[in-house]
Length: 355
Image (cartoon, rainbow, N blue to C red; front, side):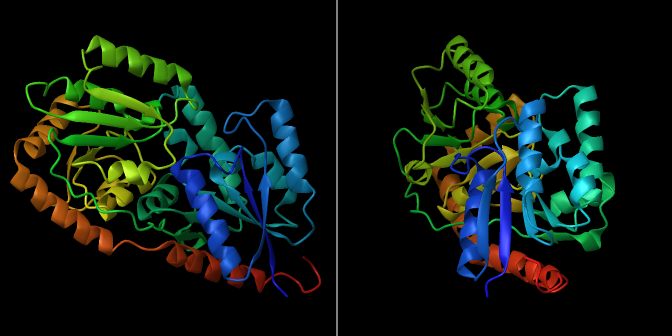
């Protein structure tokens, strides 16, 4: 008999972000390994639900039967400490942390402190914590009081994508990331404004809906910098891998990444990367395959872009290194296997007859 597993997530599972892609792929992979996975939406509003949204999510989770294994996406779980305190004794709760909530860009000091305290308490009540990078594991041990023996690292898989042949005239800069402050598109635009003497065009793909205010500010900045004739905002693109195959280099100035799946995808398609020393990005993008600069430094970001744009030979060298790095990335079945082994161990401790 297949062991039942509830996989709880906020909002809609079909959202086109790295975190939701991870959730979807993990559900598919665990199902293929024999788990009876029940997806459970916790509703909208996370990680800042109103009282009604919070109550609805807690009711859905509290309706689960005693002893149920339940994986809860950290975007919701980090703000559910009261629920976890009530239910941790009867449910086998696993938290899936893509990155700590308090590290989102743009939060006030008070908001950061509130989220951090909430997540520390919630994580203390989880049976185990799954993270998507060694960097996040270190962060939880150092600053969230989670013992390292209660953490399992399950790196995201990377699906194969079409190789980018390059050689475009003008060179095509591709950027993929939701139009939110954390993704640093403002830094990218400011960097591009410093290299207008070079020949290039740029495409930015990413949802406008998650942070409409930031999206509008980016459009205004693009016009203000005189880039509207060379930079195209494409909106949400489910075919982002096909877009990346048309590029000569990948550029994203994220201020923080819990892993950065899109960087791994770019590497697997042979795209040189320009990015920032932020979060787990240095763990994903090896030396020689990309150029990493400090976050929030448009001048340094522009210099890195200039270096690759100015030399086709340099771009080819970095592209070859990116392809090699891409071959060493884990597949999604590897991710699912790691989590499945963890779940099997936890399930063995659940009394028979309880499901």
